[in-house]
Amino acid sequence: MHPITTVHYLFLSAALLLVGTIGVLTRRNIVVILMSIELILNAVNINLIAFSRQLGNVNGQVFAIFVITDAAAEAAVGLGILIALFRNKETVNADEVDILKW
Amino acid sequence: MNFQFTQTDFFVLRPAILLCLFGCGILITDFFIEARQKFFNALTALIGRGFTGYALWQQQSYLKANGLPELVGLSGAITIDGFGIFFNWIFLIATALAIIISTRYLEIEQEHHGEYYALLLFAQTGMVFLATATELVTLFIGLELMALSFYVMVGFLRGDKRSNEAAVKYLLLGAFSSGMLVYGFSIFYGIANSTKLADIAQAISSRDPKDPMVFLALATTAVGLLFKIAAAPFHMWAPDAYEGAPTTITAYLSVASKAASFAFLLRIFQSPLASVRPTWEPLLGAVALLTMTLGNLAAISQTNIKRLLAYSSISHAGYILLGLVSGNQTGLKGIAVYILVYTFMNFGAFTMVVAMRNQKIIGDDIDDMAGLMVKRPAYAVLMLIFLLSLAGIPPTAGFLGKYYIFLSLIQTQHYYLAVFAVLYVAVAAYYYFRIVKVMFASEAVERGEISDSAGIRVALAVSAVFTLLIGVYPEPFLEMAQRSLFASLR
Image 1 (cartoon, rainbow over the protein chains, first blue to last red):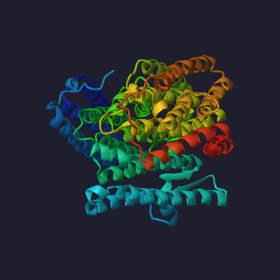
Image 2: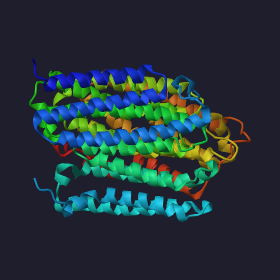
Image 3: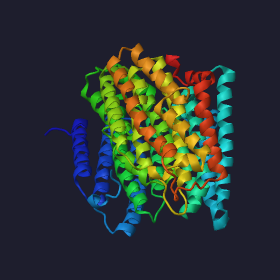
Image 4: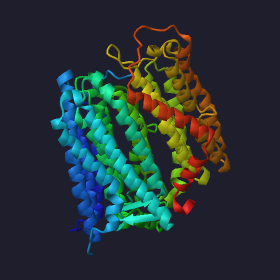
């Protein structure tokens, strides 16, 4: 049995970052894009907690709580803006949001 | 570790505390104000500006009186130095100008709410932290406070599809870039076992520069920061957000948010990442070149003046980055001068677009300015000053900013970059003069009436005076820029 080390967590978080980035770049539903952004922020949290545990330093956990708070605020503002868009355009598809173009 | 909130901490935080108090105060007093008297909110916000300015001035004179290079508060989370104070003055001026041009515009848009002014103040609070924080969590929270306020302000015209769309695009790309940035921060923390920039700088300099962890942290942080300053290839949000946002917010966004992001970027690249300079210098050089190319070439074909100015501000970000690429004293002084000058000239140009908005038209088409010279010569001449300065033609201030950047490039033997930077000035002159031609040579059109207010006139006058003053009498401003450099470079 190999113990689970910090490196394992770093790979997990890198994978989450990758999944989140691909999600932002390829998905067309704006709600799903917002969820992909949450994935990226959760990758950050895993990193911070893993380092915090490895280094025996509580700063990382405090940072993670701030990141979670920020994710919540971002989701609130994001969904609010999305509702305003939906009222006017009746769509949450990123491809149909295309008035501004050169 | 026993932590106590000391006098110094309060002194260091006072501008931010005052901004927060006034922001919350506006949200409360807004309930008691009738719809026709919303301009009282603007007045409250301006008074808040006065108090913040006083607190800032006290900090500045405290540093000067005691001969200190910096004042550290909150166990090293915040450092008040010449750099932070310089940028704080820019934010203060930009926010004050944004407040006074907004009242009339919001009345025309019929979206005159108190939250608007509160959000302006909250955004400025975030900027204050971006310019003075020296610790990762504080920097991150400052960044997000600014960014979240801007997402809401960009989408402030709720009934307008373009404003909705701009807000959605800005939010998605902004949140994504924040995620990238904070991922880099988490790695910094892992490398240094501390969230303080000074500790991180030490940890990175003691590591092998080819360490993959350092590179990963550098890459993700750089992507996040370059998004925020709208450098190519991460610039795509800027034209959309600038075009769709209420024009007053476009003016504020293009000036204050860019200055704050640059303050942030300069601190990160010069403090924790200073020792891996050989890795990022060519990278930033390439980004700066690409940014100038894309910004200038895309601006040529624009017919919407807000979009044109958006692309022009992208190219200006490229010029400012060049100062960091050369990285010597001239270059960094050039950055400070450039950002100061850019604040006034870009704000002036956007204020003209704000003035073009009237009951009938949005006023963001270049042709709406046709024949302005015949109708309102004073406004046409002011716009000419701003455009000349944006193009970098002496004796306006824009020339001075570019001069120092070019000089620093030559001093550090970046000849190729210097050649391209000079060539693009000619391209930029072409599209700025297209606006001039429309104003001075075209037949006047009926719809392009100017709706001015006292606030807009003051903002235009202040912008124009400084655009000219910095150009013809630069000494005090150069001295200010000199004081804004980090102690190690002075």
